[in-house]
Image 1 (spheres, one colour):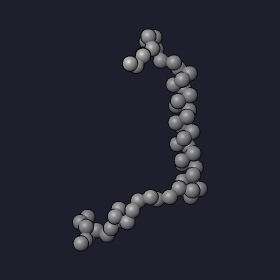
Image 2: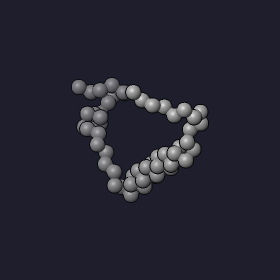
Image 3: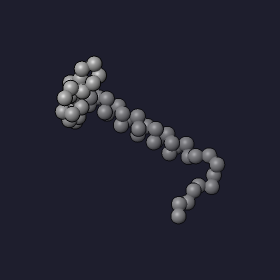
Image 4: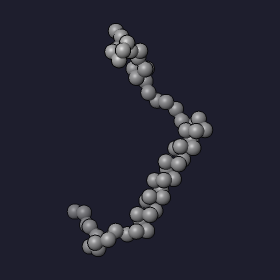
Length: 57
């Protein structure tokens, strides 16, 4: 059984820390991408040639 807080307002400090953590995470991903440290993991199937938007067989 989950217990919920009884107060009507959320903890602002916790919300601020969570927002800061998410911001830092996205900044790290952005910096790594700019530095070329990320990889494109799409398979060949994602890059098959098309002819006017239709797959060539």
